[in-house]
Structures are given as structure tokens and as C-alpha cells.
Image (cartoon, rainbow, N blue to C red; front, side, top):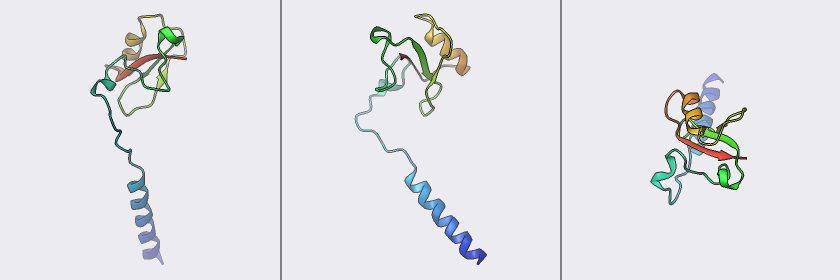
Length: 94
């Protein structure tokens, strides 16, 4: 009975790992990971009304935003300070 449970667990784990990987994106621009680049759905930009400093510390990381006020021109420095290095992507969002 224990061997059957072990085998089912391994099979289920293999199934989950095979289905959980990210899909390759078509037409990805090599400039997309540079600081200041906007990603659709998150970054609107200052000109479009974005006033919340938003960043990712790594290209695969999640978006983080400042809870306090960040002045125009200070978002990159704020994000780099938070990431303890160079942020992967920084932009203004709503």
C-alpha cells in the first residue's frame, strides 16, 4: 500500500511540474527588461496619469509598488534602494 502511494505521488508531482512552466513569449523585445520599460497592463506612465512608483527586482519577480509618495524622477532610485541593487523594471502605474 505504501509503494502505491509513493508511486502515485511521484506521478502526480511529475504531472504538475510538466504543466507549471512558463510558456515562451513570441516577439519579446530584448529591451523589455531595461529600467523604465512599460509592460502592458501594469505601467501607464506619468503622462497617462500614473502616479504610483512600481517596480520588479528581478525579471521573473512580482510587481511591487511604493505605499508612500515618490516624486517625479525619483522612482528608479527608490526602486533600486528597495531592491538593494538595480531593479529589473521600473515604471509609473495607477
